[in-house]
Amino acid sequence: MEEKKLDLNSIIGFVLIFGILIWIMYQNKPSEAEIAAEKAKKEQQAKATANKLVANKTAVAPVAVMAGDSTQLVQLQKTLGSFAYSATLPSAKNDFTTIENEVIKLKIANKGGYIVEASLKNYEKFQKGSGQLVELIKDNNANLNIQLQTNDNRTLNTKDLFFEPTLSKLGADQILSMKLKSGANEFLEYKYILKPNDYMIGFDLRSQGLNKVLNISKPLDLQWELKTFRNEKSISYENRYAEVHFEYEDGKTDYVGQGNDKEETPEKVSYIAFKQHFFTSILLTDKAFETSKLQSNNLVKDETIDTTFTKDFKANVPLAFSNGEIDYKMSWYFGPSDYKTLKSYDKNLEKVIPLGWGIFGWINKFIFIPLFAFLSSTIGLALGIAIIVFTIIIKIAMSPITYKSFLSQAKMKVLRPEITELGEKFKKDPMKKQQETMKLYNKAGVNPMAGCIPALIQIPFMYASFQFFPSALELRQKSFLWADDLSSFDSIYQLPFHIPLYGSHISLFPILAAIAIFFYMKMTSGDQQMAAPQQEGMPDMAKMMKIMIYVSPIMMLIFFNSYGAGLSLYNFISNLITIGIMFVIKNYIVDSDKIHAQIQENKLKEPKKQSKFQQKLQEVMEQAEAEKAKNKKK
Image (cartoon, rainbow, N blue to C red; front, side, top):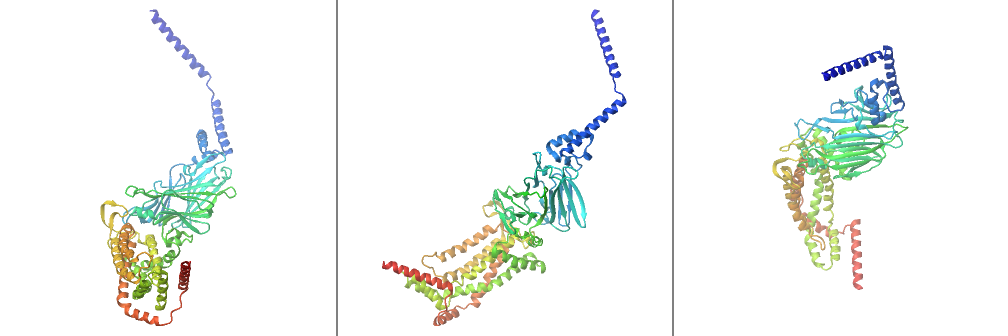
């Protein structure tokens, strides 16, 4: 009984205490006036906090600040400093702005303000009809970043910050302004200007009012990186022509080498080109970069596995301040590596196309490119037919040189018995033999160098063709006979295995070219051997020629198997035509009997005056002979 009574008394006590507390709280409740005063006080404190942040250059302008955002602003300011303002704007999200014209489509991201997609509307990947456009930039393969050094010792990267986009038009031009703001009127701006039907995009980079925010004691560091996508059928062939090109020191051009971890550090750089085989991405500047660091790294270690990218290109350049601000007029080019298109900009951009140096480049620029453009564009020949007609014209133009070369061989062939006789007569005196041989040449009116000079003249044209055809964009994805792409290999059979150096397919045009060069060398080697007797102390040219008859076709088979079909077609037709020209010259133009009679007649005349080369050679021989005689007396 006592326990129950005690429990009931405890409960009654707790209820009374709780009631008293409620009554006390009610009695001390603030009035409506007091509540309003407290609310006003909190709003005033929040506003004061925001104004203080702006005054210290580290917060967002009041227009972007709400009373309840002060905590968020403080957190942003700890990491972004003055650029916390950019993170409070409506554009501070992963949105994109797309601009396009007839030839190119670009997508620019708010985050970082740079181009994250660049597609070429008139070109397809791999093969015609694939339905996949050539995309120079896609899926984070590119990066543009500027490192910002602030006065409060922060290092910020523009690629991590949000830009505010504004799209407008000026006539037919589209203008996209991307601003990274530290205040309402303080910003770093990327301005993209896209004109109709143009691959060149204007790119103005400037700052306004940031001289109080950024450390201007040293230049900003602009970093551009691009992992180049594979766009062609043969990744190894495409990768061979993927390089970093650049212009420096008022018009000089050069490139970073192939391979792994290649680097160049040119000065006064006016453009940087990340070139693929048939496409290129170029950054140009009106105000040259004082220094640069350009890097290239090969990403194709195994072409059976590494099939997405070819090279990893990087460029680091300084952006110098002028009067406390950044101001650069630049441009981007995303488009084909087409000689005519690049040359039209008058910026020396056509130098990124490897046409060869010196005379090889001149032949390509002033003969091959205009002639091929005339045949394919002006006349409108199909590309395969244009190559054949082009080859015929070149070989006919070179036929007088071929004739002189063969005529010289025929003369040497007629003199061979007499040269052999001199060799036997002066067997023990090589110097005397050389002197008498030179006298015989002079008396007979034969120049032993006449056969070499025409052959040397043809070499630049041959080398120029090796540069021209791999660079001819016109051939890309154009078919001829069994070749579906004249810019790539013409596979007729896919092997179930991979042969080192050769590949995993069989191309037919290299086989035809190898057969043609075999018969051409077989046809000419006999005359060369008979025309030029072996000289004492010199290599046996006859044996070397016999070896080359078989080595040259094998080299053609191996190395041309993965080359473009256009080049192999050119070599096949070229050797066929040369065989035909040599056959006509040998059987219908050059008469050995007439040549022999003419040489005998020349012997009866006064010897021709020796050329300067012959005179110098004669003097050297005489001096050597005199020195030899002097040594014998001693």
